[in-house]
Image (tube, rainbow, N blue to C red; front, side, top):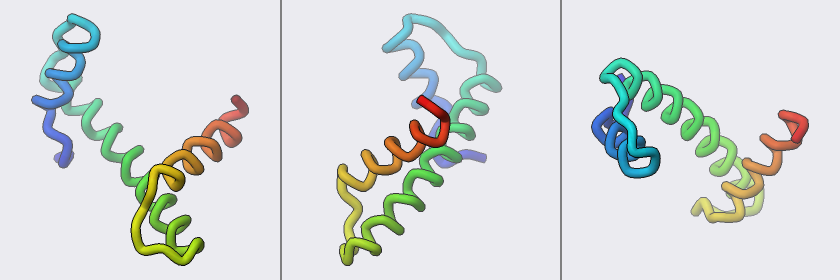
Length: 74
């Protein structure tokens, strides 16, 4: 079970796209989002520690996104 509530996913899809999503669709999206968020957080924490910091910053998240784009060839 994902930590991200499927009700939040449903609300986001409805708000931004004006569409409904099934329960199993919302649960799957929440699971995938949590998996991606965990990877991002792990990278960001390691990056902050490498820089001698204990707090993750916007810069750490941006660095993760940049390396993801490089990895995916974009």
